[in-house]
Structure formats: C-alpha cells, structure tokens
Amino acid sequence: MAYPKTGLTVVIPVYNEQDCIEEVLSSWGNFLNGYLKGVSFNIVVVNDGSKDNTPKILDEIKGKYPYLHVVHQKNGGHGEAVLNGYAEALKFSPDWVFQVDSDNQFLPDDFPKLWEKREKSNFMLGYRKKRYDEFNRLIITRIVRVIIFMMYGVWVNDSNIPYRLIKGNYLTLLLRDLPGRPFAPNIFLTVMAKKDGNDLMFIPVTHKERETGQVSIIKWKLLKVCFRSAKELVGFAFSIKKRDFK
Image (cartoon, rainbow, N blue to C red; front, top):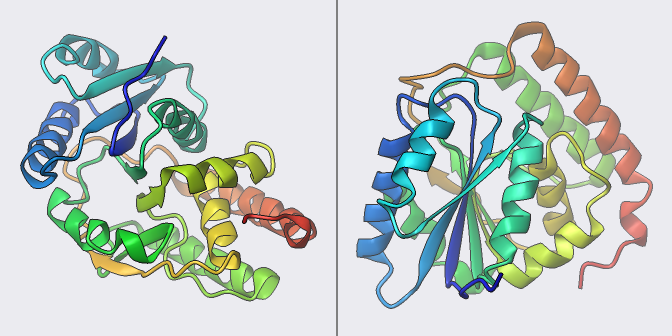
C-alpha cells in the first residue's frame, strides 16, 4: 500500500480513553489544520488493546476526520504502542514526527513553541512546567533523571515526556539503533539524541490535570516499571558508545 508523504505525522497511543479520545483528536486536527499553512499532516492513532469503547469510537470516527489513521494492536503497553506508532508514521515519509498522549493533559496551543524552532534541532522536547501526576510518578521521574546523568553524563529534565518533535529521517536512524524493544522507548530516544549532540530545547509546555480515564500503571506496578527501566538504561550504557547516530 502506498502512503502519501506528509510534512508532519502526529503519533498518539491510546488505551481506554473513551471519554475524551474524540475530543483530543478533533482538537489536535482542528488546531493543526488552522496553524499549518501549506503543510500536509495526519494523525496516527495506535489503540493498545483498549477494553472500553475506545476501539469502537475510533472506527466510527475515522471516516469523519480525513487526517486520521487508526491502528489496532493487542495490549502491549504504552512503549510498544509508541514504537508501533513511530513505525507506522514513518511509512508516510514525514518531514517531522510529533508524539503526544491521548489523555487530554497537553494542549495543541503549545505545539508552535516546538514547530517554530524545528530548523534548530533534529529532536526537541517539551518540559512540563507544573506536572499534574501522582507523587510516586514524580519521584520515579527524578530517579530516572539521576540514573541518566550518572550513566550517560547528560541532564535531561523530562526524558519521557509525550510532547516531542523529531525530524523524520533522524527518527529512522534512532529507531535503527534502539536496543531491542525497551519498556519506555522515549527515554532511550531522548538519551540517544542528547548524546548525539542535539539541543533538546526543553521548551515549557502546559500539563493539565487528568479529567477522564485512569493511569494504566499505578502503585506497585509503577515501582516494578522503574526497576525495569533502570536495568535497561544501565545495560544500554555499555553499548551506546559503539553506536553511530550520524
């Protein structure tokens, strides 16, 4: 199947977001349609085996929004959905790939802050000025930040933030060298991009409180995820110096 080339492809993984998914997709589509003058775009949504009405809603509305491209997969976790979303996005040979989550905690209005700086870096991150997440998630973010600094010698404010703009051909190179299928691939991609000398910008963006749905990883599972990610980061540290991201 031939895919039309895009100037921008947005990747949105989704799991059990029946109460807000159409609002999220329409708000992003309407904003980008008005903002991106002369730039083609589409939105790739990866449904990660949702158990609620999310799959049905996506199938019902995909004909309503011409920019929408829906992929259904068995539940494999957020990281797997992100990786599959990136792979699907690259089929459109996009100039740029943007990734954001589906929980309606981020605003389309902040997108120009990254887009207008796109010629200055291959890889740019937003940074949550004020983060509305549970305390234990905030602690784990700090732990990961320290691990990254100790193992790689780089300081990254918000390494796993789902608000990132990546040059399409550069993302292809990063995914080529990604170590396996890590649980939190966005963290690895951030480290790789930073080690490659990119200015990640760390652009402040708004983070809202979650109004619908629920966090898929909570309490003790979150601690387990932290240990797994730390183990993967340490293992990758011994091979990153041998890789060439140019």
